[in-house]
Image (cartoon, helix red, strand yellow):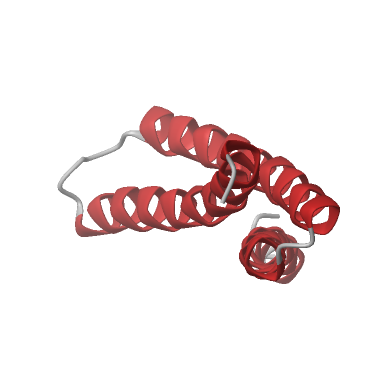
Amino acid sequence: MTAQTTSWHWAARGSIFAALGCFTGNCLVNRLVLVGELGEVSWLSTGVSVFTSGLVLLGLVLGGVGLFGGWRRGASDTIGVAVIGILLNLGIVALTIWALWVLRDVAR
């Protein structure tokens, strides 16, 4: 395995790590806010939402880089990891859009 192939594979892995970071950050902060241990800290919730949105975008970019590198080198394992990362991040985006669509009447 060459260093360049390893870099492509790490980019693909980074896509999965970004999705896991998004899951962890949102679950942890939302759980603490719901339990009431953090009190009224909307700034923290907003900050985590912005940070995890950036993680999702970074995950999509890294997945695309890993997919390109895997395709270029013919490494099916890198392609597979990149596709999984892209699907996880697209799933987060789809779930967010769905939740906003369902909850749009509640916010009014």
